Length: 120
Image 1: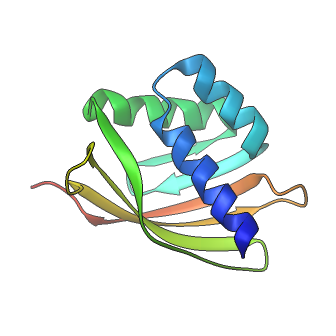
Image 2: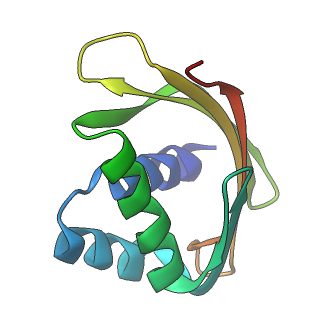
């Protein structure tokens, strides 16, 4: 579904935004205010919670970027895709798999994240 290509692009752009104001603008445009995000390391809700989780990743992995590894595969307002996190133009150090669902306006409402590969 082509609209999910745009949604996943916006999702990764949000995770790549190191500037708090830019990240907030992306959250307001593409993420529902009541969004919930859950992965093995974080369980947060709302724009502020998601922004804090993203900030923590940037602090742990400075200069790393998120890239799309595979997907998205989508149906019924939900999509799954694999992403990588690593230095720009290099193989990812971390690989994960996310499932997201959108609300009736196409905004990201729920994210369930899984970590497939993490540094030792």
